[in-house]
Length: 396
Image (cartoon, rainbow, N blue to C red):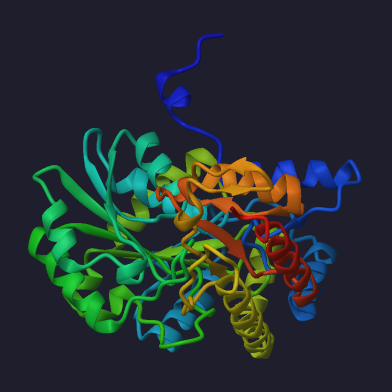
């Protein structure tokens, strides 16, 4: 069968591919420690699981409204008002099959063939691919360790052409953990309003901030809210990655268009998972803070250990659960007798020699970095850092 040009232009997710490779090695009996996938190692809180069990027992196993059950959309509105100072009605909210699906729906609704979509770099691996699937052109804006991996308003202004239609902004960021300040966001918002650029604000790591505070882009004023689709979900904050519930809030006509797209792609998100998400949003929030505090301890330890490794330089990430060290100082040198030419080669060496899996920066659009997730136990982090340090002693 002939594949479409669109299908051939899209690659597999590098992070999920690495996770599959790591799991296959583990299945073969190889002792691999994975820092590849951003998935909390905590279990889903019991009250959320109980809500799902009750939904099954009560026969809540049929189709629901394609855009999500009213109860969940109402709970999301309550959450956005309480946590983010955002007023939305249920018909301005769409529940999807994970936040990734919410972003995809938004891109499909806002991006025409040939439109340019601005994406700060480094970026989450799926953003450019989603834009390409919508027939658009991703325009990446380089940032780096010297500017804390954050795009400036001046950089955004310089990237805009008459074809620019959308900006995808992610704070806290995957892969860097960067968090934009309110002042930084306001300057970016001024540019977006001036040029009437729609903003998809990916805030999935909102609850995982250790330094500073989270500011929702849409909260910066009525003009900003009118051009913003806010995306969030329960995967990271409630340790519900497998439940696949994300949501988007925005102008009614945009959400309606996204809902139409979803109705033909997946229909409703899983009925049982929706009931579980209601319990998460409306139930006890203490488990979130307990997880956040534990992540902060892990972050502090990992950053310290990474900065002790020759050739590694790591900022303290203010949010999310990733460290993104600059490893470019290792290029042109040998580790275990193997020449390191780029971050992919170094990642392969660490996997083969240290049995540690990390994602090369090239997957996120930047060369010279590795991403380490600290969404795993302290025991795994300690052992993983020990293994890397031992292998890097051979640096010559």
